[in-house]
Image (cartoon, rainbow, N blue to C red; front, top):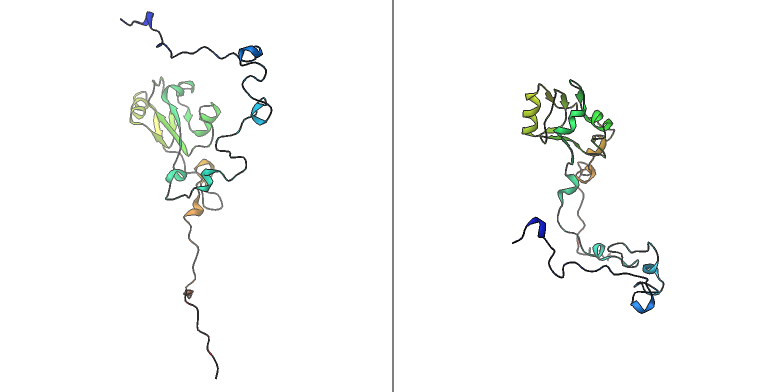
Length: 194
């Protein structure tokens, strides 16, 4: 019967490590399985995935169809409740304080607090999102939760920071009141003067 003390990998699942460069008679000496010269024989020389030697790669040759909403997805930085214990009681926890504490990196759209762990003292938390279990635990120790102030808009009407999205995709070109004449596919008949 299998027990923790007698667990073994299945026969054939583990292989002996191929030892390279141990003499020509071994079959893996001299060039150590890398062949003669060339980019792939060099130290650190490798070709990235999908590279076809300068030829137009397959991923760019295939047509792209449909719409993908991934470009407009809002990514939130996740912070667990147990990570907030490093803040002093009664202090304000917002994006700036979380960045100073190295709990948030990069450029997320906002911050979400999850209820993993226990909070030891009350804090004033100002984040975009919070889970139901985290809200319950924060209010239990006398903390308060509020939404942060809206981010200032940049000159082109977008929010600053990582929340920027490709707004130009949805913008339509302004049209004037005049209707333009459609170009017909039929060739126009030339009028012949008599």
